[in-house]
Structure formats: structure tokens, C-alpha cells
Length: 401
Image (cartoon, rainbow, N blue to C red; front, side, top):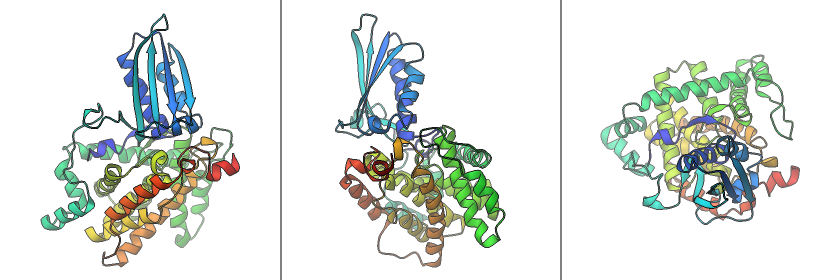
């Protein structure tokens, strides 16, 4: 598995796979052919189906079309074999003769792949020797360590400075979001809700206030993402509100230090990495279970660790966070990361707190392991028709837009 730096990425929304990934690919292609007179980019599958709502064309044009002619071709009915988010870049000289081309895929969470295995230019070195939770749990028990200490064992020393930076960006996204009002960009004219939820939450008694604040924080970050603000992939842009909402709430309400928060983020990242390595965090590949479901699992583990959970209880919390999102479709209305994405972040955040509480009351023993539910999620996602995997052709998208 790769470094957590490749899981937690700081960038601008609204989509890690449809905005951040294509933007990075465009920068790489520009560096290969800076002398080109014009460019052509063909988008396939999910990228073509929902790219306009996800601002894929804007991200690409901001790099390749700034000073050169650019043609973007949309082919939503064609799916390249390696991944649904395929892109074909071509560069031309002044005589319209092709001087180079490159096929690349945006595989989720802002990551890219050429689909070439070991020969892939994005095939960076592995940081973690173990890639299943069963192996890591055994290591923790044998050495008397926790999950975050396994991260410390494998990563470079600067990982903690990086996670502190990530945590700062998450907090800033919450605080911007709860102070922003107005309408989100796009044809839905969807009003921001975070500010009003935050105000209303503070008027409730403590018994209701806690959950209402979590809603407000999740809405805040998700709305920032939908408007193209700076967020952190956790594990994706579409699910970026879940983890900040829970961690911000716990840091404010329970006084957890930044050190304890980043240790919890390390544990959460480990669980996210396991899913990314063994299955997928791409909505176009496995549906929203791979985005919001994985985000819920990650912060369920983080919360359980913060409240003193054992390795078994932490694993149980994460397993429930993912298991109870199995089969969740990715059906963004009008191709925007707004409906149902924003509300899903809010509900997943509260579900993570429920998973933590449920696991903490247990002894950590249960029948379905995290590794098993990851395998099931992958199979379930691949069994889902493309209608329900970020194409906006089925589900709520077909009914509303």
C-alpha cells in the first residue's frame, strides 16, 4: 500500500476523480508537449457522462486551454477496459499533425493510472508491507501497539507534519462553510444549509445539539466542496465532509488534542488505504459505497480510537461503517456533487458516531471482518450496472434531472 499522503490530498472540489485527477493529468501532458499548437482530450464513460456537472472541462481547460486551442470530445457510451474514468490526450503541431498521445485513467481520490501495472508511471513504491487488516491487527497484538503506531512504523517522519496540515485544512473548511450562505453553483439552485443548521443547533438543548452540530459541520465542508473550495480527499471529494465533521465535533466537544486527532486520522487512513488497495474508492467503479461508505468506515475507526477502543473494537466500528453502506449507488442529480451527495455526508457522519458507540459497548468480537466486507463491497460494486455508478443515467438522477 502507498503512503497516506496519496490518500489524503489537499485540493479544490467538487470531485477528486472528475476534477482533481483530470487537472493533474492535463498538467502532466502539458509538461510532455509544451510545444504543441493545440490539444484534444477525449473523455470516456463516467468522466464524459457527468464531467460537465463535475467541472471536468473547466479543470482541463484551465491547464491546456489557457494559451492554446483545445477541443474536448465527450464519449459517455464508451468505457475503456481498465477503468470507467478514461481519458485520451492528443497534442498537435501548427499543421494539425499529431505529435503525441497518452491514455490515462482517473481512478478515484485524485489518483491517476495508466493501467500498465508495474510499468505504470504512477506506480510509486509501497510504504506498507501488509495490505489486509487481519495482518495489521496481528502485528498490533503481537507488538502491543495500536494502528497509528503501525503507520508511524512504516511512514517517513514527516507524515505527522503532513497530517497536521491536513487537519488544519479540514478545520478551515468547516469554519468557512458554517459562515457561507447563498446558493451553490449549477442549475439546481441549491441553497447552502450549513450556516442555518449551525445557528439552529446552538439553540437546542445539549441532548439534540450534538447531532445537529455534526450535521452542520458535514454540510459545511460538503458545500465548500460543491462550490469548488479547498478541501481534503477523505478518501474523495464527494465524501470529504464526513471525517472533518466528526473530528471537528469531537475536538470541540471533548477537548481532544491535535496530536490525538492526527493519530486518529492515521488510523482512519490505514482503513481507507486497505479499501483503496484491495477494492476501490471510486464512485465510477463501485458506486457511492466506495466513497461515503469508506469515509464512514474511516472516521468510525478514528472515533473509536479517540474514545479508547481496543484494536478489535476499532476494527468492528470500521466494519459496521462500511457494511451498512453496501450497495449504495452513485447517482448525482444533473451530474453535480450536490444531490444526494451533500446530505449523504451528513448522515454518514452521524452513522460513524453510532458505529463507534455500538462497537465500544461490545467486546469487539463479531462474525463479519473488515477484510470480508471490503471484498463484498468490491464485488457488489462491480455487479452494479453503470447506470448507478456516476453516470447520472439512473436512480435519483434519472428521476429528477
